[in-house]
Image (cartoon, rainbow, N blue to C red; front, side, top):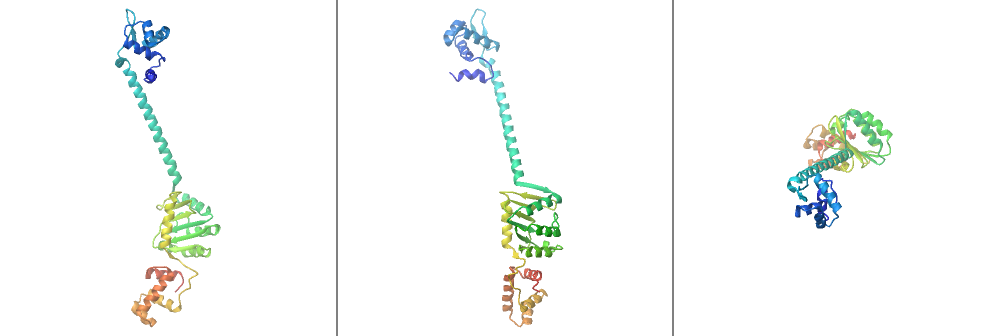
Amino acid sequence: MADNRQMLDEIGLPLGGDDEAVLRSVITHPARGIDELAAEAGLAPDAVAAALERLGEHDVVVALDGGGWEANAPDFVLSPHVDRARERVRRAERAVADLIDTYHRERAARSGMELVEILDGPETQARRLLELEFGPTREIRAMQSGANAAIGTRHAAANLRVNARARYRFVVDAAYLAEPAAVELLQGHLSRGADVRVADRVSKLIIADDHSAMIQLDGAVAAVLRPPLVSLAIDLFETTWRAARPYADEDVAGPSESDRHLLQLMLAGLTDQAIAAQLATSPRTLQRRIRALMDDAGVVTRMQLGGYAVRSGWI
């Protein structure tokens, strides 16, 4: 019964605490007077009279001409209040749903901004590139293909002289090596202790320690990745690094004069048979010597061996 007494409040009728008990008495005992209803409900007559007045103001009950009280049909009187209560609940649900949607949308947007930052234009990219390069104290990993649209090759070489705190590892490709001053820049990297490798093709990428990475999406747009997305850039770099071949290794002795001659003949386009004849050796021995040179250079094809020999000053 205690829960039922809340019904009129829940449907939006601002009535007193005794009103529902009085209403039930009127429904079950129609045409009764105040004293009889008070006895039935276990209430004082004054409390019943006040409740009947409030119920009458909302047309829930009506006074009979001959005395006593009668209830109007609840489905006729109370249903509109129930409908309005339902509409209030629906509006509340829509409001809450909108708040929930806004909360998650804004949170997702903030999370996205925290994980990925899109950079438009070379000036913005150049500024962030310098921040990435000068910020870390442990390691910078980078992959470079072709020209750097944000910071020119010579500018990048000057930057490297400033930040001497970090270890540098670079992977470059043929498009980069064809750029003016690229070889000069790589020699500068090597002279400062950087490790440089060459792959067939790479993306433009720089990783500062393990906390952020910048990857070129196209000529005008780049993206900065932060944890945990930066791990994707790290995996890309490390996979490419393992598959790449050394650009130069000062610890590896250069080839002998005979091997230099072999390389010159190979680059001149002679067949193995002709080279073997020139060197007074067998084609099988020649192939073993070429394989040994490829292993020293860390390459897998003769074309790569030729390029490595030229870059490394073997011939």
